[in-house]
Length: 236
Image (tube, rainbow, N blue to C red; front, side):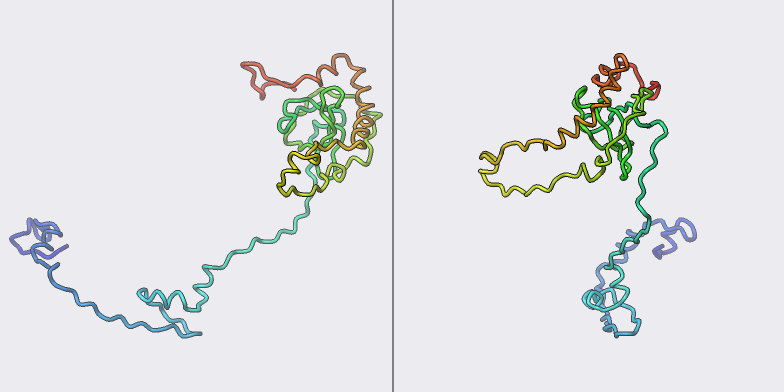
């Protein structure tokens, strides 16, 4: 608290004037302050000297571990965990009808065939019924229904693995007019061997679906919710 005369005190230790008023009455702002020279000392290598705040250049150019630690980027800790395929849900078995929740065919019903080594699910429409080809999907994006197709005598070909679904390397476009409007701009046809594989894989599945009344139309229809229906209350 600023010092004040006894006449300016309301009570011992309580001033009648504010701090800024006392400062104005004393005219202390008119007295020029003498700046004292600050001695700066350059840091000596190997010694722990205290830096002077005013000497910014010395502080930034000094070679100290304290300065370098702030610029170091912490490296991510290496993990040695092996990547394992996720466990298949108990509600998903070969022949289970699934509802797709994401992707190009969301809302469509498909038939589950097997789980691949990567943990993804191998599914088919079949293509003849709803236009969905052999695909890989994550089990987190499907709903398993209680409807099943009898695939007890069906055996999935071993060639349908993760390598089978890898995209072929295509040369990048250079942006020329010929690439967009010329003869090379024609749409690339689907490989003939994959079309034949699709027919072979769906042959037994379509035959099993035909044995159950109305199952073909059930797979061809898409899943929708009516007004007032809550997904968590439905029995799939």
